[in-house]
Every structure is written in C-alpha cells, then in structure tokens.
Amino acid sequence: MKIRTSLIALCVSFVMAGGVQAADRIAFGTTALKSVHYTYAAAAAKAINEKSADKVDITVISTGGAVDNLNRIGQGQINMGLGTYATIYQAYKGLGKFEGKAMPKLRGLWLHSPALQAWVVREDSGVKTVNDLNGKQFIPGQRGSATEQLVIQMLEAIDVKPDLYRASLSDATAAVKDNRAIGYAKAGGTAVLDGTTLELMAFTPIRLLSFTDEEVAKVKEKFPFISFQKYKDKEVQDFPAFTSPVQVIGQFALSDSLTDEQVIAILEGVVDNPEPQVAAFPSFGKLDVMQDSVNLISIPLHSGAVKFYRSRGIDVPDRLIPPEMK
Image: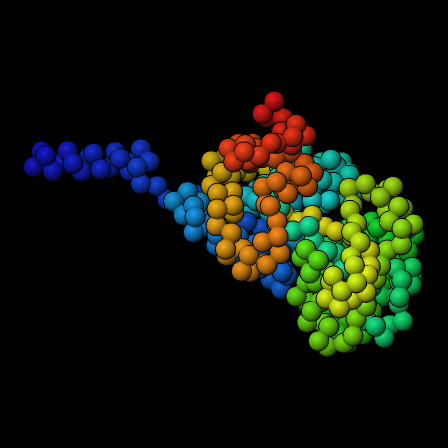
C-alpha cells in the first residue's frame, strides 16, 4: 500500500514538474478567409502543429489584416500576427496613421511573400493609367488592411484623388463585378495574382495599372519603405509588362507576446516542414525563407528568431538585433 501511494505521489510530482505538459496555445491573427494569405497562414499553422506539436498549438484567427492584427496584438488578443512589413515598420516607428502610437516592442519572425500589389481595373472602365483614377470609384484595399493604408499613402504622394470606395474583400469583388467600382488594389503572391482577382478575371476582362518612373520616384521620396518591382511581358499571367508596388508580407510578434522557446518551435515548423506551405501557397517554394527573412524584414527580429537563425548558420545583421539582446 505504501509503495502504491508513493508511486502515485511520484507521478503527480512528475506531472506538476512539467514531465507531461500540454503544448502552449498560440493565437495567430491572419486576414480575410478568401485571401491567399489566409490560405498560407492556415498551411503554416498546420506545418508548425505537425512539427512542434509537443511545444506549441497554433490557432488561426481570420481578421481584417495587418492594421487589425496590430491593434489586436497591442490589446493582448493574439500572440502573433500576419501583415505587410511596410505597415509593421510604420507602427514600430510611429509613422503615418501610427503617429504618436509607436509600438517599439514589435518584432519580426519570418516572411512568406514579397507580394505583388496589383492595381486592378475593369477593362471597360477606360482607365489605363494610375492618373486616370482621378474622380473614379476605386477600392484602395480591404477595409482596415495594410493594402488600404499603403494605397492611400501612395495616392496622396502622387496627388491622384479617386472617389475612394471602402469595402470588405467580398464586397470589393462584388462591387467591381457589378460596376459600382471600377477596380481595387489587392496583394497576391510572388508574381502571382490573388485568388479574388483570378475569380474576377473569369467574370470580366481586367487591366493591371502600371506606375511610371516619375510616380515611383514621388512615392519613394515620401515613403522610402515602399518597394516597387518591374514585371516583364507575361511574367504575371498574360498581362503586358508593368511596374507595381511589392508588399513584403510576413509574421510578427511583440518582444513579450511569445517566449524564445515558442518562437524557436514555431520557426522549426516553418523551416523544417515546408510541404504543407508549398502545397497551399506555391510561391513559398521559391523563397529561401531564412535568408530572405533576414534580408527583407525591416524591424528587429524577436530574440527567439535571432537565436534560431543563428543556430541554422544565418548571419543576422546588427540592424535586426532587438534592444533586449544588446
């Protein structure tokens, strides 16, 4: 009897000491359900949960995108989020709509897409240039999203004034289909259009607007964190060559919303289990996720990410080392 009692006590002590522990639950704020980036986020969560099931349990939450995620992480509603690094950088520095509301604890994790930001218009709208958007009903992006914020900033920089139509992603697609708006801006993948735009193409012919060199210069003079890319003929579907903004899209946390151990477990899943991510988001397979993240992320990394990348032989530049590691 004494032996049995001792064994029970030993088992209880073992559990209490952490011998049997549930995985840490992590809330991951993403974007709209119909977005290709939600598809990626769900696949990334699957990859992480498969690889690091004993350490973390990722729950994907559909949200309004980067700005919504920044608000939610600041309020402690999520542990990590998805967003455009141009927007995350502004929040980190307290620029633009974040003036006076800087978030210096923001930290980078990894990126999954240097994404084409397509400026899409109906071909029958007669709009052929960005300047032609003046006075036309144009949707700058999903309401509350990073795309919406960046598009409005770019329009202001080049002094183009559409009649802005604010809408959710599903409402935006419907508005363009029935000609209540002549077009919208939407981030896709690496030289790939978003699923909503591909759906729209099946309904009505569309045109992708191109930025002139002068327009690019004006935007970059005022917003140096916005990047552009020139695409060759037919590099994107069957469209002629054009120049468009590129959104570096990836994941972020706060310095204290995830522990180093949680971040390392998350990145192990992302890096060591790419198959679910590539299956859902093929352009992920074109990335060197660790090196590209170090090259393109514009805010300090989470200390756990620094430790992980260094452990895999990646040279982490000083600009990405967070204050808590100095």
